[in-house]
Amino acid sequence: MKTFTNEDFDRAGKALAAAYNGKDAIEEDKLWQARLMKRIRSTDLLSQQLRFFDLFQALVWRLSPAAFVLMCLLAVLISRFDFVSGYEVSKILAEDPANFGLLSIYAG
Amino acid sequence: MPNEPFTPNENEIVERVLTGDANAFEYLVTCYKSHVLKIVNRHVHQNDVAETAQDVFVRAYLSLPTYKGKSDFKGWVSSIAVRTCQDYWRKAYRSREVPMSSLNEKHQDWLEQVLTAESEEDLDKKGAQKEARELLDWVLAKLSAEDRMIVELVYLEGLSGKEAAELLGWSIANVKVRSLRARRKIKKLLRKIVEEPVRGYGL
Image 1 (cartoon, each protein chain N blue to C red):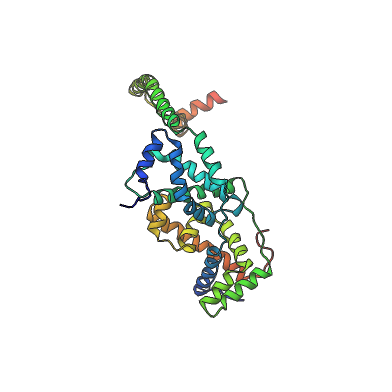
Image 2 (image 1 turned 135 degrees about the vertical axis):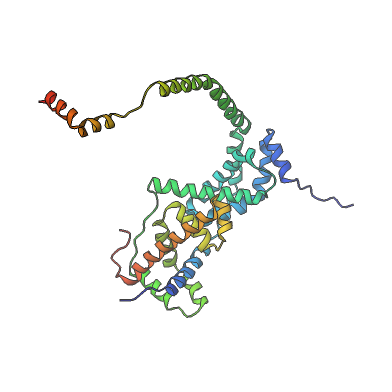
């Protein structure tokens, strides 16, 4: 079986690079630029810029009161309630033999 | 005093376009179309070159508000061209439009002849053969769009890591890591062709 060395890889790389760089040049189509400019003229750059800023301003400022209320609500909730996940509650119950007995009575 | 042809400054043209004169953009298209077509022609399929080059200019037109006159327009538009080509391949891979040609004994023979070539001239001659382009397309189709671009820029075009990073908008470290990984992958693919008998690769 033949082995493929680093030197072999470099040689193959050089030949493949020659193939890549030897790609035929593209012939220029005379109508290409006219078609492109038609596309450009139909794309209104100014209105696109304005549309983006309008949308940004409208959305950001309209949503800001709602975001503020939501933040206050979350702050109140976090300060008043102790967050313990259901998984942790069930783990405590399962690990505690007294509670386990109580659970098994209810279950059975 | 002889009349010199008026050559407007690129920044002035950009200003004019940004104030609503879309026709002024044609000056930039005329100046850079050959350069953009050359870049795009290297990276995408021949049939898609014209369309992709148009996409480059439309993207440049839409990105003009972000163009800062400090860098040269040629470099800026080159970067857009390379990124558009990368997007072209991303789209092609996503829609599975990348042709996966299969290899045969001819390609294996070609590679073996390359490995025994005696001079650089021989390697160039081998590179001009049809099998070389087919093998290259096969290898590149096995890479991701990002790896493909990095291999083409760094290994096939010979750009430095810094130049490739600027064109792609990546960090130099990212370019180095990706190019090393891609190189390793290509080496593995070529080793497989040389060391194992051809059983219809790519099928």
